[in-house]
Image (cartoon, rainbow, N blue to C red; front, side, top):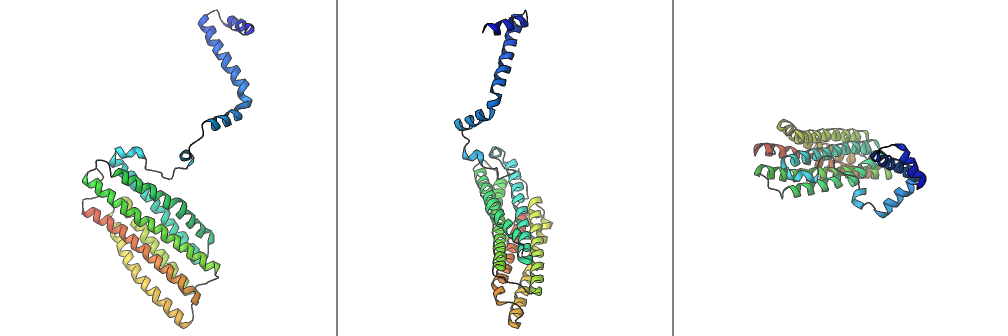
Length: 286
């Protein structure tokens, strides 16, 4: 230690400054000595204090957080934003289901299946648990009503994800069994996809903004879709009887129509929910 103490004593006539200099020199020296072993020290630290599995999981949600439960108005607003985020993803899934079934785009089909299993189902579970936990707080009657509405909306939007998954699976069957639709059937299916996607998007916007005009429009579009659906089914039967359409295509085509009709029904549910909530006292969360 003698060389070190001699060096420090020469660094300043002030004892306080000598102590400070000693600390600085010591810290710099230790840092330089340990620098080559940084990676090894980091590995040792991870081994001694391993991360919990929960810490390694990516955060699924973007808006909700457990800390919001003490602020019901904030929690309800953020839960609605999270729901809209899921809704937007399921709308994209419908569009990709369209590409998969109409254009035989198998990459789009795989994306839909991936989103359903890894995003929609998982986030819906987290969001529903968040709302259930929120309902245990001291809420006003209006806030309790909003919680029940959110739970119903989650169910409808999650089911749309399931139906988009069904459409992607039908597309995979179509390609795997080398099934083709007639040009007329393809055109009808494309128009039905376009209409139901527009209906569902309109319904989602009405939920996001609490806008009753959009909600009424979504319900009206769903009524129009019901007529288009019946016409498409009858046209399909006519093609089968005249030999224009492959018998192998019947199951896939009818299943696609059925899934699209059910998506329209869920869009209608979203619109009705917004209209009913407005009738029963508005969208206020306070």
